[in-house]
Length: 180
Figure 1 (tube, one colour):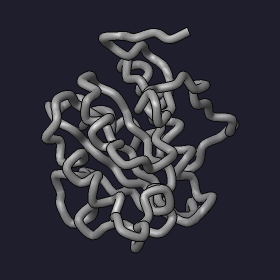
Figure 2 (cartoon, rainbow, N blue to C red):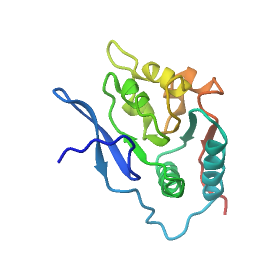
Figure 3 (cartoon, one colour):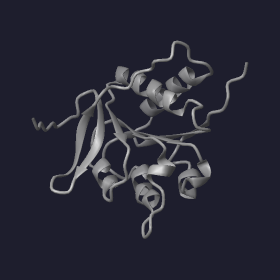
Figure 4 (cartoon, rainbow, N blue to C red):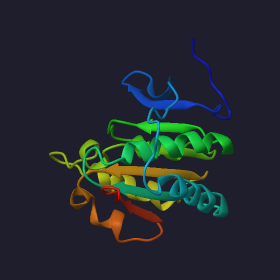
């Protein structure tokens, strides 16, 4: 059944596209943490990100980078779970579709938007640069307030303008092996 809302209910959603219907959000199972023990300082960093997001009145972004399997997705799951306490729905973007920045920009409420493995999903294509399309979205010139979370394995494959402009991404956490 199709439902429309003026505000997204608390939950987790995937961005989907159909050539006849356009963009829409589809319900997704809430993210969970299966690990019994979390090593390192990620819980404190999750709290830091959410406090900082609550303190600003515009879009806010973080980049989580590091080797494959180091804990970027775990950090993102922890953040999504903790954000439920703040009534923040989670929107997962797992594919690049031209126009996706405008669709996300049209969401006018506070949400978290997760781009997992951004450098792969938004890699340069034959005649377009998907990462460049996202720059104005990350700048926050739209209505609404969003927390953008970008994970990447190879930071060198990110558009340099994502990294060198402090207003776009406030934190860049480079995850590495935990100390003994």
